[in-house]
Amino acid sequence: MSGPARPDEYSLRGSFVRQSVQLLVHGVRQSPWFFAGGIAAASVFSVMTIVFGTLLGAITDDVVIPGVAGDPVGGRWGEMTDDPMRAIVYAGAAFVVIGIVIALSQAFRQALTQSGVARVGGRHREVVSESLSRLPMGWHRTQSSGRILSAISSDAETATGPLHPLPFTVGSFVMMVAAGVSMWRSDPWLAVTGLAVIPLILLVNLLFERVVTPLWRQGQTLRADVSNIAHESFDGGTVVKALGVERREGRRFALAARDLAAADTRVGRVKAWFEPLMDLMAPLGAIALMVVGTARAAAGYVSVGEVVSAMYFVTLLAIPIRGLGWILGQMPQALVSFRRVGEIAEAAREVDEPGHIEVEGSGAGSVIFRGASIAADDGHDELTVLVEGASIELRPGTVTALVGPTGSGKSTIAMAASRLTLPAKGQILLDGVPLRDVKNLEAHVALVPQTAFVFAGTVRENVTLGADIDDAAVWEALRRAAVHHVVRGLVGAGLDPLDAVLDERGSNLSGGQRQRLALARALVRRPRVLILDDATSAVDPVVERDILTGLSRSADAPTVLLVAYRLASIMLAHSVVHLDSGRVVDSGSHGELFARDAGYRDIVLAYERDARRDTDGTEEVSS
Image 1 (spheres, rainbow, N blue to C red):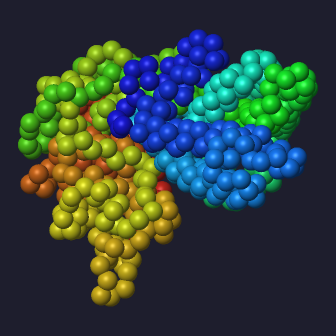
Image 2 (cartoon, rainbow, N blue to C red):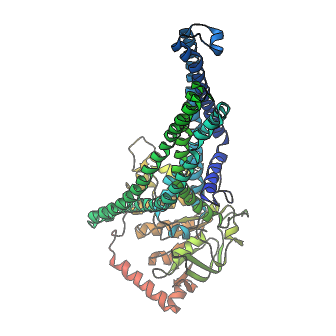
Image 3 (cartoon, one colour):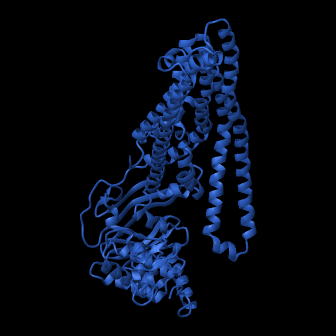
C-alpha cells in the first residue's frame, strides 16, 4: 500500500488491550499474505509439537513402561512389533520426521514474518515522508529536526516491534488450544490445573503496562532531543569550531545522552522484572500439574503416560507465554511510537490538499496578492501575523523587487508566492487562478532560497533532481546562472563535467557557486515565475547584474520576484515594493519611491553606502 495515510488509519481508541489489537490489525492489513503465511507456518510448528508430545506419552505407556517391566509392547506399537528396541527405533524415525517439519516451518515463519514487518515499517516511513512533504513550512518551523528524524527512523521501527513475534505467538496459541483439548480429553482436572496460569499472565502484563508506558514516552522524547542536538552540532560544525565551543556542545550532548540513558535504564529495570515473571508462569503450572497429576494417576484416573504428556504440554505453555510476553513487553513503546507517527499523519491530513485546477499557459506568468495576510504558529499554539493585507501585482515578464528592513516580511511574501505557506486571509492568484487551487504549480513557479542546498551527488543530479532533462538544457541553465565555467573546472580533461561529484552540502563549492547552482536548478525547469529570495547574496555584484540582466532579456524571460539587498539589484527592477513590519508601505518604480517614501529612501541610501565601502571583488565569495 502506498500514498498518504487514510483517515483514522493511525487513530487508537479505547483501553490498552483494545489499542494493542488495533495496532496489530493495522500491521497485518499492510501485509496480509506475509503474516497469514507466517501464522500458517507457526501453526504447523504448533501442531507438530503437540503430535510430538502425544507420541511421547504413547511411547511411555506402550513401550517404555512395558519394556522396563519385561512385558510385551502394547497399543499400536505392539501391532507393528513385539521388540521394544525396534519400537523405539520406529518412534525415533517418527521423531526425526516431526523434527524436520518443525525446522522447515520455523524457517518459513521467520522469512515470511520478517518480510511482512519490513513492509509495515516501510509503510510507516512512507506515511511520515509523505506527510512531511505536505505539511506547511509553518508546521516545520515549530518542530525540532530531532523530532522529525526520530519519527522517520526509531518511531517507524519501534511501532513494528510487536509484529515480529505475532505469527509465532498466534501459532503458539494453536498449540495452547490443542494442548488444552488433549489434556481435557485425558482428564479435566489436568487441563484446569495446567491452564490456571493464564489469568496470572494477564495481571502481570496489566501492571507492567501501567508502569512502563509513561517511562517509554519520556524516553522517546529524550531520544528526539539527542538527535536534535547532534544534528545541530554537525550542521553547525563550522560555527562550533570557529567559536571554540566544542566543549560546550559536548557537555550539552552528554547531558541529553545521560538523561536518555537514565530513562532507558528505568525502562530496562521494569522489563528486567517483567520478563522473569513471565518466564516463571510455565514452571508454576508444571509444578501444580505434577502435584495434581501424581494424585490423579495414583487414584487411577489417568495413566503415567498421560501425566507425562500433560507435563510436556504445560512446559510448552512457556512458548506462547514467552511469545505473549514479547508482544506485551514491546506494546507500550510501540503504541507511543505509533501515536507519534500518527500525529504527523493527522497534522498532514488536516491540511487542505492544494491543487485541482490545471493552469495552461506559456510565457511569463502573472501573480497577484489580493489583501493577503499570512500567519505562522509561534510554537506555543498561538498565531503570529507575519504579513497583513498585502496587495502586490507581478506583471508578466517584469522584475519586482521586495525591499525592507530585516523582519519586514520579504521572505514570507516569497514563500507565499511559491505556496510554501498559504494566506490566512485574502488571495494569491496565478494567471487569475487561486494559487492554492493550482494543480501543477511546480511547472509554473520556482523558488530559489538564500540558503542553497546541494545534495551529495553529481552536478547533473543536483540540477535535474531526477527529472528527464537532456544535457543541453542543463548546460544552458548553468550558462544562464553564470556557473558553467565553475562546473567545467571540477574535473580533468576528457571527463564529463556534469558527472563531477559534489560533496555533501556542496562543501567543495563556495557560497556563491552553490547559490548559482541552485539558480540553475530552477532555470532548467523554465518556470514562468521565478522567485529569488536573496538568492544571489554571496555572488559578486557584477555577476549578479549580468545574471539578472540576462534573465530579463532572454526570449523566455520569466516574471521575477526578487528579495533585494543591493542597490544594483533594485535598479534592475521594473517595480519595487517597500515592506515594513509585515505591511506594504508603498510600491512603484525606484525613482517614484525614492522621491516620495522617506523610509525607502533611507534603506536605499544605506545600501548605497555599503556598496561604496566594498572594494572591487571583496563581495565575491565564489569567483
